[in-house]
Image (cartoon, rainbow, N blue to C red; front, side, top):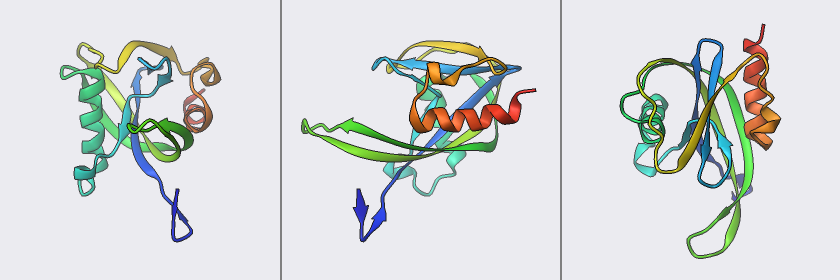
Length: 148
């Protein structure tokens, strides 16, 4: 989608949730693996991105999870087809910011849109087996910086 010759993007924030040498991936009810996080809502435009990420972590991982949000570590550029409520489809583009987040404890309780999760070792995670396109590319950029 474009306006006056300029591309229009959704903006998303993602949690690169780490527990030591492990990173969390979630599996959603649409049979896709993902990183916790998601898009900014209309009423969040002026809020800090970290507060948007806090909301998404609560929605997707529950209220009892303890964590510390760090710095942005990678960026994602994703293009995908989305189904519209009217029954049609459209190609959307998403610009994502991946924050490194330290898991401090608490029980993870998946939200309504997720059915599974798994902690993966950052040293041997093959992201292409789980993520596709821009999500995979962004995660791979991050993994390059943390693999030893």
